[in-house]
Image (cartoon, rainbow, N blue to C red; front, side, top):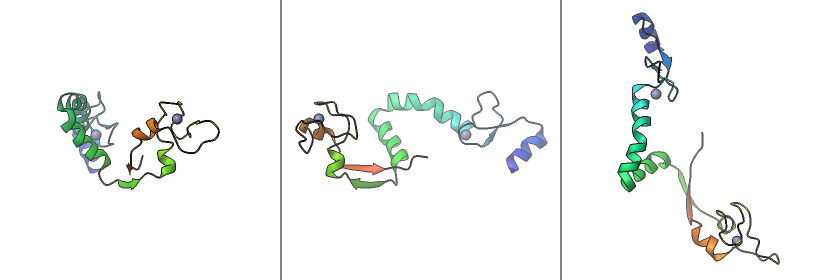
Length: 119
Ligand SMILES: [Zn+2]
Ligand SMILES: [Zn+2]
């Protein structure tokens, strides 16, 4: 709010940054300097930074999330089954109401997941 007042007093037009909400005088891009930099360099960063860049991004995104074991029930329903094509969250259609899941599906199911709050 103080920054907005200062801009007003200087006679500079400002808009809220569409990403973070901070006032910015970049009325064309509607991005503050920091958000503009990150958003415009992110694609190149991922493209050229390879696994190191992806590791940094994953840390930034998921740091602090709770890690927990998947239950057997969840593992049996993880991802789409490559054998019977059951969808994520759906049990394998093994026929005859057989319990469990196709081995090929279980090979792709993680043992642990990190839970992240989605805003
Ligand atoms: Zn911003
Ligand atoms: Zn299946």
